[in-house]
Image (cartoon, rainbow, N blue to C red; front, side):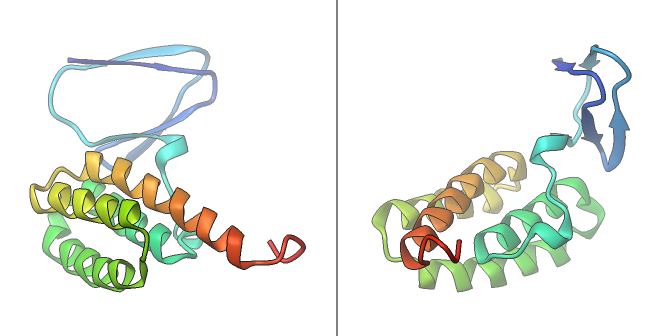
Length: 134
């Protein structure tokens, strides 16, 4: 059983259906379901960096299990591109943790690992770009 408290007008995705709360709402989920809060959902147009594209592909695998093989293939392609571009040991460790979660089809926890990669990527890009270009 999972209890979720939503703020007024907060979005949540449950098994691919987008729901929006009307007022403060408590939801109790009593069986297995793919659930993401609105703040964890990424729009396709926001997947504009390698780590964000990996997050989006993983999110789709989590929310769309009927097309799991296609999503896993896409994740593998994106993962290979990203891990070869990373240099920092902690970022590579996050990639390995992400890959283990994906291999176990634990996409929800893989998304957590991917958020760490997005943060690392943003920090690395911030160091490369001049302050006025960011």
